[in-house]
Image 1 (spheres, one colour):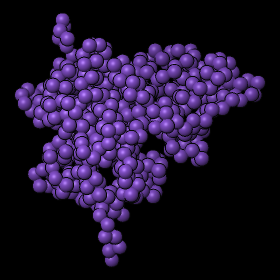
Image 2 (cartoon, helix red, strand yellow):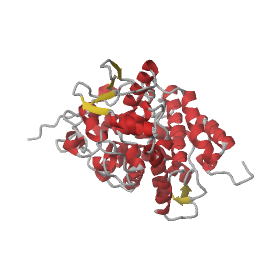
Image 3 (tube, one colour):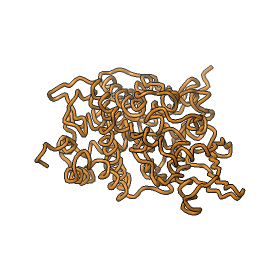
Image 4 (cartoon, rainbow, N blue to C red):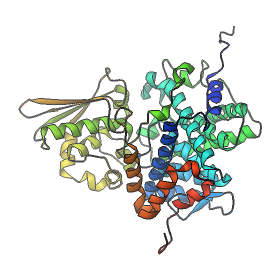
Length: 464
């Protein structure tokens, strides 16, 4: 007996909404936030070129000259458009600085859209529409499951890769000018092909492949799915909301609520990163810093108790030292110790120079005094409580539900621009970084995205 209602599938509804996102229907504030997502994400990519991992990602892709090649940002290198897309996606995620809108919606969407825009010579208007569609679709899929996620110890996957792949497919469908039915097929195919994004790779012993899972793999999967749909291939249209679909797989009560998105835009509520570490750590770091400012910088014989949601504790509370730069970005005790030892912001250098950081006496001392407690009353990763108890038994505590960069405490436009300039200057130089920022913020006036992307190649010595 078929008990399914006559209402359209979640994918069909998403495809309809995506196809309706045009410059005529997208509000001004949403368009601005899309441009800031592009700027912020490119800044993360540029910063990623300074890591050791960057050489690994670049070496894995063969250089392909000609019209089908695309820019590896922040380098003089070009690769086939899919190879460039994968490398750029990897670079943008490696430092854990890319935004948290819809999980990690921007990194895959921007990586794919840039490669396609350059290859196709797309306008800035089309590029912006694609970015909006990709981020909005990703966020709406992710939002259907996030409030009721199963614990990672139950499902063993991180619910970011699949929504991001679907969102990238919507963005790529826009770049390829697919119609509504083809867009739906592209999204369905992407969901079918998406990697399962294992929790062990993200939060455990993931090696150096981890940054592939949030940016590179969804970008590749979504763009490939759009090309398949363009050729007439179709996919499983009920893969989200069937009894064996994505919602049932990752969530205890996941469901599609189209009405919840009427008149609402994810990009109006941006969630960006100030700290170069997993978003699960931002609230505890900010709570620790607020306590330090209130109580003074000396811990003495204090004990530090950190309460976080159980699913957060499952994956970022670790009873060992960080074993790699990537592991350090997902290590709650390490990042709390940095904050307790004076760091106002977790910087890329804190993980890149991990060996030096672990040799610091103040960091070692702080890590020994930290205890993490799962608290079932906390349900979101932006919720935490940090309690510091001194040798005399007196305790001070700080609850946190809105760390810097969250929708309740957003980074301003100037903050995002300054973050981009700080990340990009060492790679592009001050003048070129400023020129790209200005051009990016005027994206709707760009007639050919190739002119914009050309600014992301480091200048030849002696030239700007």
